[in-house]
Image (cartoon, rainbow, N blue to C red):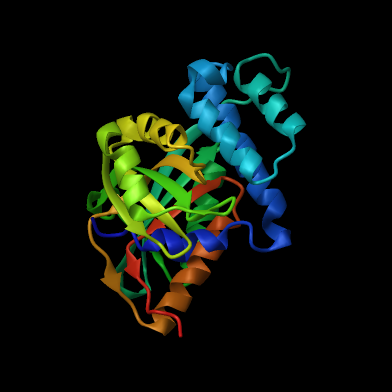
Length: 248
């Protein structure tokens, strides 16, 4: 499966700078709220909410913020907001296809902000379907190698998750990425936990069918576009199919 290497090279963009911490918190809280709205406010009966809460906690979002988001999403809060998911497609330098997922209560604002972020940084908006056709929805479970003094191996993960629906396990350096079908995310995540392991995240992402190699200059231009997009409050995820050069 192409595209697996990108998780290690792009996820570092989130939450590295303290200046982005507030934006990250807002996006994680929004995910919790939407999950509660779609599947109810009980994490025991709503796996999507359970995983959204766990991801927020792993990123140190305060429990009070999470609890309020659950209440808003489940209709218990007076300030409940309806969000919708929107997708935008763009072409970056080097012919790289960029897929942008937004979660918003104002589609006009989202469309305008995304367009500005793309065009001001050397990209162009693309027709619907021209970029998304090279992506597949996949479950992506990330597991750290170092877990309280225990070093997790690829064999450990394969043995733990194969029967639960895992398709591939990739070594990303400091951790592993387990790919599966979207409907198998919960079972694979539970299998990881049943093996006595912790997981970093368990989500459904868009994974490209193939990667396109880019040089260092093109990678920098692409990263400027991604940074501009991730700075937008409505943008939840940004995907690309670039194969970046190895760092020295």
